[in-house]
Image (cartoon, rainbow, N blue to C red; front, side, top):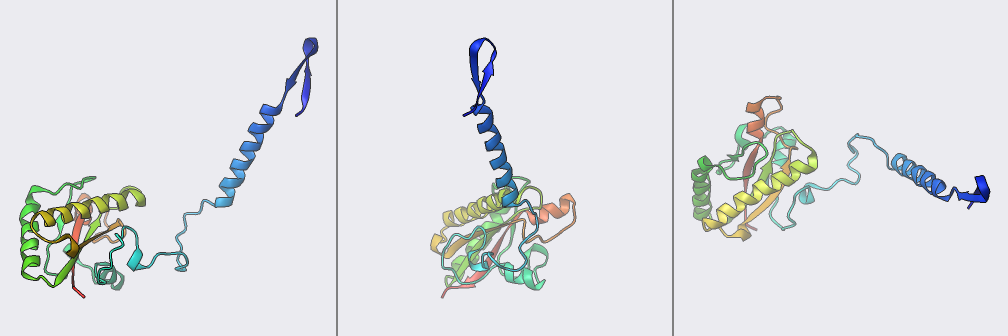
Length: 193
């Protein structure tokens, strides 16, 4: 501690000033040390595999879903492929829309008639908002559909959920019509193992 003389025989300590300066220097070093690059890791190092990707619920379900189709460029309008129909959501919403009740009932009927199948409900979002926000919103959308299907008699053991957030868009235009296509739950069917 350094003491600095002050008028009339008093002394002032500059220790508080030193602590603040040291804290500021450490904060700057920490910020610079962690980096602030927005580059994505393209080497694959440190990335999660598709089996444990963002939003996975950790269940050992057979490999399925839109990711392989998307990677091959085969994912088309309405999530193409598969016997079940997608449902869509409003902006920043995960409530099942009234017009989707009939779709979910038809999906449940198909699952009832095909008891050897499992379904992975994929929650998707448009590209507005952060990755973290959209992963969370996609998870809520997928869970809402799973909950609805279980109320219709489909065993929750046959349903897994995953959130892709904004990572697998069907459309990339910056329009409301395009965003509406991307705000969806897709139902990927697989055979039980």
